[in-house]
Length: 263
Image (tube, rainbow, N blue to C red):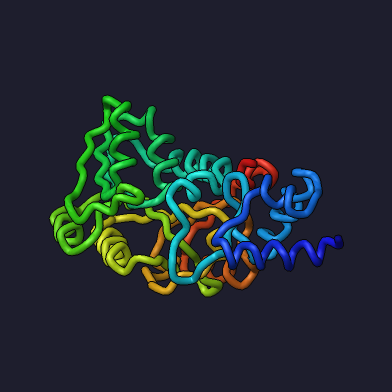
């Protein structure tokens, strides 16, 4: 069976079942695990499939992928982005970390920071930073989204409005070609917009996979940010736009092979 035929079959199975596994596809096609992994990686590079731990799934424009799958997606790239972002976060500051696996990576990169106050609507961020005795943690209230430990809704927005913090470090679910930051949950979008309004400076942390995804709700534009940390160079038009907006773009350029989802 040719690779082109396998590609069509893989996408058909993904549409039928919601996701595909490396082992299942190897048995289905009678090929090696390495062949399937290569097929899935190429489909992911083409933006036709979302690569996750042990397989892949069809990208959606209306629903986010599961939290555990997002944790596995580009894990090495997120860690590299987070470490670079943390270098620009000074000791003795107040900052907000929102919902997202990349902001959770930033929290892990802040373990050695001193005399910082971290506000968050992400229970996972709070639990990560418990290990830093020099970090004061404030969890804002709200409706608990059990799937990923996020707090969203009107109560969260109102709680955030009571603060003015030095820095916001946010992530998003998708990035459009014109630099718009997008998300799937309209309640989370309202929270993110409030976070940006209450911050003196703002950073975005997002790996390259966000440019291959689509989501229906607009948070705002990269033009509103001071810095954008990612792992691959932007398209020339967007890079030029960021220069005109005065948004600093920091590209970590993590090794692509390490940034793929684990098998």
